Length: 560
Image (cartoon, rainbow, N blue to C red; front, side):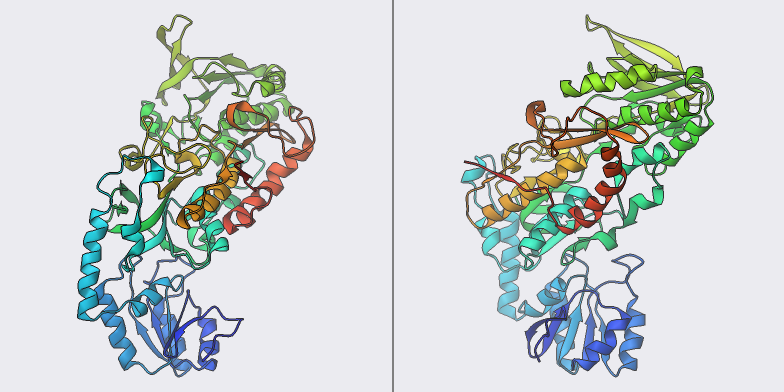
C-alpha cells in the first residue's frame, strides 16, 4: 500500500503506517485506503478539548469494520515494555495497521525500536550513557562534543527539546519544523492556554477584546511537535536531560531554553492580596487587563499611580503605555484635570533609547503627568489605598514614602524562573547565558536560548523573538550539521508606544540603542498607521506568521 500525497500517513513498511491525531471524520477514509486496524497511542485529553476521546474513535472504527486498540503512551515514555506490548498488538491485529499519537513520532518509535533481548540490553546501556555524558562541561562551547547521545539509538532522546511554549518556544519549533520536518521535537509547556500578551495594554485601554488574546495551546502547537504537558523543574545539561515536576526526565540531543520570565509579585509586600480590587490592577495579567479598563472608566477624580520596577522586564514600554492610554481617555472625557497622574520609575530615564524621549515627554506634558525617577514600589495596603515607595536621592540614600491612590497600576518586578536561575545554564542574574550574536550557550555547545529568559542585552519583546527565532533555528541546525554558525542577531527589538488611542510611536532598535527602523519614516513621530498595525497587523503576524514558521521581515544577518 502506498501513501497518497493527500494523506499525512507515513508508511513504515507494508504492515504499518503512522500518523498524527485523527478525527472521527477520518475513519471512513482510513477504511477506504485498505487499513484493517487502528492503534491509538495518544492518551485521552493530551491535546485539550479539541482532541476526540478514544471511545468515540473506537465506535466509529467498529462501525466501519475496523479493529481498534487503545494503548496510550505519554510523551517521553517509550519504554521497552511499551514497545513489547505494541509488537504483541501488531501480531494479533489484522493488517495493515494505522497507528497514531499527537504527531506520529511515538507510534513510529514504538514500532521501529527493536525489543529483542540483545537490543533491550543495549537500550539499558544507552540509558547509562545518557546519564554519564560529558563529565566536564566547563570547557569553551566550541570544544565540547555530545557524540555519545547523538550516536545512541535510544528513542526517548529527542532531537530537540524546547523548554517553554510561549511565543519563543512555539515560534522556534515551527521554524525548525519548516526547515526539517523530520526532526523529533518535544515542547515542554504546562499551560493549556497560549496568550498574545502584547495586546493586554490595548485591553487595559479599551481598544481590544481580552478573549481575542487567548487560544488553546493544543490549537497553536506546531504540527509535528510533541507536546509534553508538564512543568520543567531542573536542567541537567551535563547529562542532556530536563527533569519535570511530575518526576519524569526528558533526554535531548539539542536543547532550546525559552521558559520566559517570572512575575515576582512577592517582591511587593501586600500586592498579591489586593490585586483585582481596591483600585489595584496590572496589564501584565490576563485576568486584570479588563479590570484596568473598568477602573479607567470609573475614575472621575483623585490620584492615579503607575509604576515601573527595576529592569529587566518584558516590554519595557508597557508601564508608560498604560498611563498614556488612561490619560487619553480621561482627557477625551473631560476629567483629566481632576486626576493627579504620577509615573514612578525605579530607573533614572523615561526610555532607554534617547531619541524617543523627547516625543514621549511631549505626551507626559500634554497629560500633565508627574514623573518620579528612582522610585520603586515595595508595598501596597489595598484596603487603605496606600502605596509605599523606596526613593533614592542623588547621594544614593533611600527613604520610604507613602502615597495615597485611587487607582494603582502595578508593573511587577520580573526574574528568571527558579529552575533556570538555579541551573548550570544561568549567569549571575539568573538568565540563560548566551553569546549575544549567535544565541548559543557560552558553556554548553548543544544548548541555545531565546526570548525573555536569555541573557542577550536586548529589549524583551515579541518583536525581538521574531528575529531571534530565525537566528536560533539557523544556528542550531548549523551546529547539528557541523557547520559554522553564521546567523547573527543584532539585538533587534520593537516597542509600539501607544501614546494615545489612535497613534503609536514605533520604537525599533538594536544593541546599544542603535535605531533599526523597518519603514522609511521618521521613527520618533506618532502615527495613525502604526496604531493600525498595532491593533490589526501585529496580531495577525503573531498568530499566522510567527507561530507557524512564516518568517516575514524576520531574516537573519550573516557574519562576514
